[in-house]
View 1 (tube, rainbow, N blue to C red):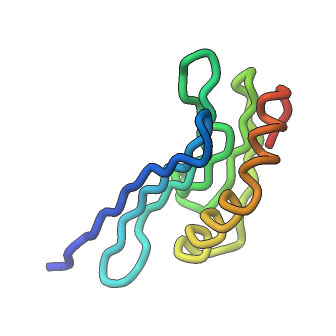
View 2 (cartoon, helix red, strand yellow):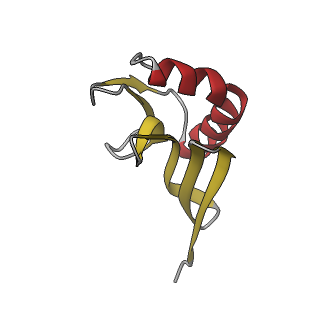
Length: 106
């Protein structure tokens, strides 16, 4: 019987910005992941940028304040996409937040 390891953490990047990471690993392979940049606006935490595999493939959702989204498929396996997503958000979160708060897509 394979043991599935679940990992979850929430990291504050600024007073109004945080990084959410969730993933599951079974038999050394990433089975599921979510890496999300969240921005607090009007007292509510909202996703601005999300990397996940919710539709059976690795992709990135860019969201704006109006709730619209743009989806971009990633040509990566889940482990690669998980690593890429964390690196991207840690490196670019300030510019993503700025664009999001202006009503643009990050």
